[in-house]
Image 1 (spheres, rainbow, N blue to C red):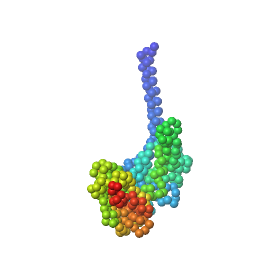
Image 2 (spheres, rainbow, N blue to C red):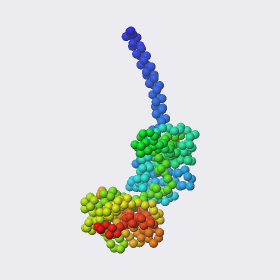
Image 3 (tube, one colour):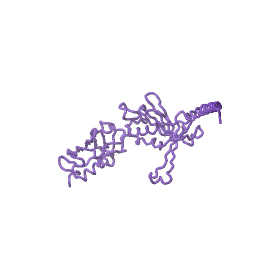
Image 4 (cartoon, rainbow, N blue to C red):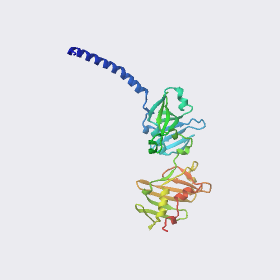
Length: 327
């Protein structure tokens, strides 16, 4: 058996060896952690007030988004011209394209940039600014999709794995991140523009007041959930149900770029929606003598104008009083 003295010696040797191993391994671990970057374009979303992206197609000009003073609204600027942007679209872009979590390193030098489409010439280059300072940027590259295999495919409705390759600006490393990021960057400017005329949950609409060019008007009020009256009389249940179903989400891509308020001189139809927990929304349709048929405005999207060449918007929004009368 070991004597007490020998035991102490062996224990001291073991402790020294343990310390040596620890000192040797810790720097290697830290170096490994430093080399693998967990999050790309690390910044605070609320600090971003300008986003610029350039598509790899040389004929497409850069698109720029500027946050307005209210901190909630955005403008899209293309070739110096500003349009009202859809804030939810910009918010989603920010949520997915900053603080991106790296799934793995796909390449560590420029030799594979072209393959992953993260080179300066074949990637979407997106930059984020706050005030006069540039906060970060990235090159959004190739997208890949791996269908789900096995027994879980049916349970998850066949959803597979979507991956995008990304290179952070100023870095050589290519990372794979989760999601279809190229979908946020398209040529069509209308994708980013505000298209909403009216949107609300149909069960929250409490009143619809309309004034038509022929001088007629009607006032539909909810007297209890699911029950309405028009000018104090019962409404047709089927009619009001169909109307609220279609009227709770009115939008259009027929955006007009060259309309000014002084051009709105035709006969006007007006409708006001009152909704629980939100400001009333007033929609107006001005008759025109051209292919637009009507020019629409909405207090939900100030500064935006829509044409109605097929009369789809007008038929959806403005119903004659008889439509709501019990048959």
